[in-house]
Amino acid sequence: MTPRAALKLQDSPGTAREEAGELLEGAYRQVLSALGMLGYPVTTDGNFTETAARAARAMLEMVHPVDEIEDELREMLGCTFAARFAAPGARLL
Image 1 (spheres, rainbow, N blue to C red):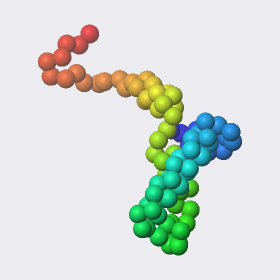
Image 2: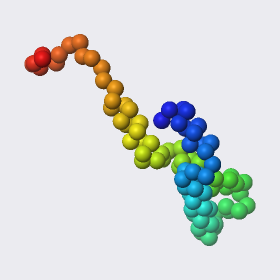
Image 3: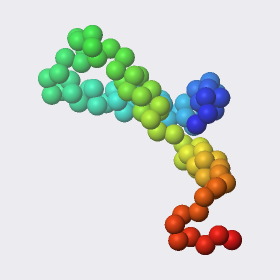
Image 4: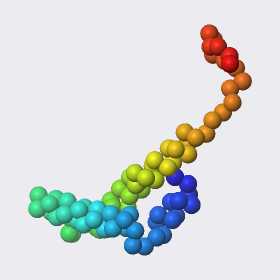
């Protein structure tokens, strides 16, 4: 993804990406709640502060929309380079 495309995704409010971020943050809050039920100090330990938001942001940085990935792959695979030498045994056209 180009830096410009990354900025566009991060800056455009109301997008599917923003909605996905909110859903992910809520899901991570539920995970933290479950960890709290298991005895982890998620409400009293400062290390857990903003963990749900951080985890959601990290997930969004690692996972990109499918159409964005396909566009980038098409762009990469569309690049060709002229070969100056043929492989051994290859026929030159």
